[in-house]
Length: 202
Image (cartoon, rainbow, N blue to C red):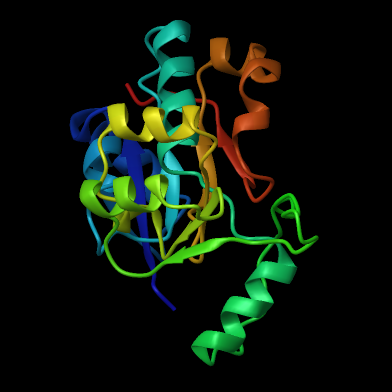
């Protein structure tokens, strides 16, 4: 098992400021502080993460969690689609927690587009221009080599993303203000979250 956990903050410096406090809770794991932008571009990034908002401004913390949800926390395919892909790839891994099924096509079939390897801007534009399904499945978020502008353009055309290796959020570092505002952000974080750390490091 990969014992690495990425501490993902708005900057690597912010993430690193929580490392000592978090090391006491995750003493069997190797913690790797990193910015969100670096995390989503590093193909070797850990699957497990702790989200580390800076804790200085509620508005900034909400913006960071919203960005993490939009860019890193993509769901796995629904079990029906997962099973079909697993059969094609010769995998026997069980399906993770499922996402909603893609809508059926005119023929009544549910369709998705599997994009193995890196998804570059040229590849994404070609797929978007073709009569392809609107549910796209990448191997992991780090394989999607697209900027925010193109991702937003694709979203506006109805493209939805799933990943075969979804990020697992094991904890969220929360300030008292963020705790009180949990109703505004808790829906953005997957159910797998098990720990919230309320104290900021000095």
